[in-house]
Image (cartoon, rainbow, N blue to C red; front, side, top):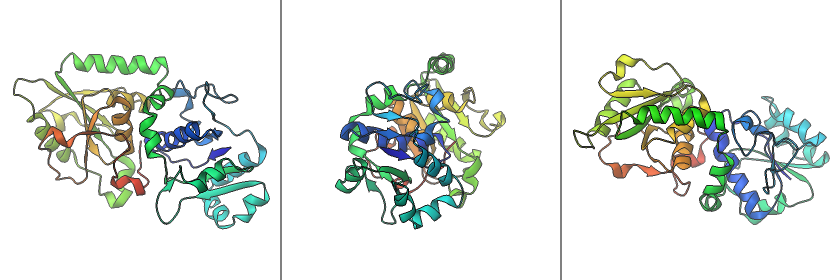
Length: 309
């Protein structure tokens, strides 16, 4: 059994990392436990109520339900737990498990012979890291991921109402992800953009459509949005629920925002063209700049832990 242990403190981070392991487990037929996903599990049809059983025919469960892995998982949630256990690999081995973390050389290919031998080995493999990827199977099993991470009906209904309400006023619905909060400290605040940055990008986006086109901007943020700053545009809001906002973003026609796994997941799930603003003065000059995220291209976040709502 492979057990994911790291709490990545972000919806998009957890969805993307879990998805890479999930499709790899399906492709290579090993059992996967994702206890770090438990706080999000009630939201999705693929994980709600699945504490003790596999989801359908997939070898995936939320809990290892084994004393030693459960104990080590709790230790790994302490601030000093990961550096201590990862620097003392003999201790987990003494307890009958194998513990691995990120590598200094970059991403770990989940299709590598070394990883798969560990995944199928006699010991539980505990993975505490971010840089584990299976890009080919992520793309190949995209529809499976969309079924697995389909929101339960109450949230789907709330999202449908948000989209229906906003589309009555729009020919084109553009989702704008205004990320604040911990972006003040992440990468020295490089992606903490002012509202003026988003206003400039929205003006440029609106100019890409005919003058008579009704372009409506659906605004999302983890902080209050001052309406006066965006008064020149036709705008709407979602419900401020993290799941419902994410899937309403996935229901737009285009997405604009800073580098973020939150908008990456929305783009992937809804097959929505996405334009990340990698700097505050990055112009939006063409719809060709918008690309659906399928986890196939090499982009800057691949070697980074991208913070998320």
